[in-house]
Each structure stands twice: as C-alpha cells, then as structure tokens.
Image 1 (cartoon, rainbow, N blue to C red):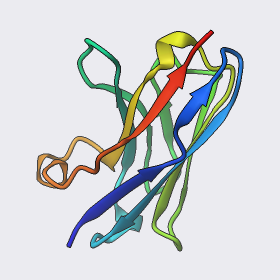
Image 2 (image 1 turned 180 degrees about the vertical axis):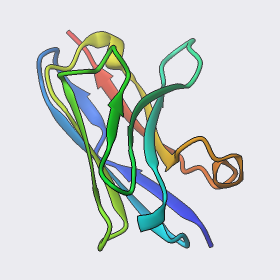
Image 3 (image 1 turned 90 degrees about the vertical axis):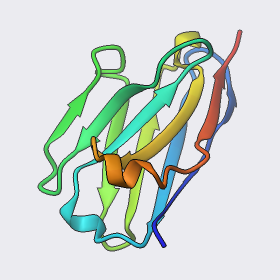
Image 4 (image 1 turned 90 degrees about the horizontal axis):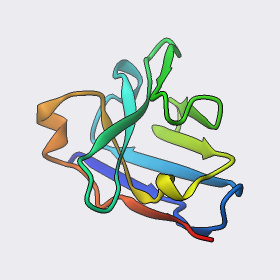
Length: 117
C-alpha cells in the first residue's frame, strides 16, 4: 500500500530551524519527482519545493534561500531543512509525488509547523 509519513514538525521561534522527513512505502521512489506542499490557516495548499530523480530542484519564491529539499533514494525518504523560519511559514506540511493525482489519493496526515513569537 502506498504511504507518505511526514514527521519532524513542532513549535519554533522566528529565525529558528526545523527539519522535516517524509518516509514512503509502496512506490518506486527513485523514479518520481517528489514535492513538499504546505497549507497554512485559511490558505490553499501551496507547492513549497520539488526535487527530480536527477536532483534538479525548484523552490517557491517565498522559501528560496531558506529551505533545502533533499532525497535519499536508498531509504525512500524526502527531507526539508527549514532555516530562518517566519510566522508565515506556519502550516501543515505534506509530501507527495509531484503533481500526480493518483498518488495524491494516498496523502499522509502531514506534520504541523508553528512559528510563533
């Protein structure tokens, strides 16, 4: 069964750092572009970062220079290092195959990141 299991969220002050991990099951992880998404309070879900199987990376403008996405194909895991966090980064963070409606059906519960003063 396909599974996406996000972890690593919590509370952090502005300017702080946090590292998220997404462990996956049931897919050939290495062949897919993988993405982190987030949904903040009262907001639509947005794409945060994407990494291709070859390691090509794209970031949303709002996180460029602060967030770093990486992948471990051997462990079938996706990571997001978040530095210099801002209150507007507060959201539930999700991982999934990039823009794939079939895998979207198996979305995990996400992990809550709260940046507070």
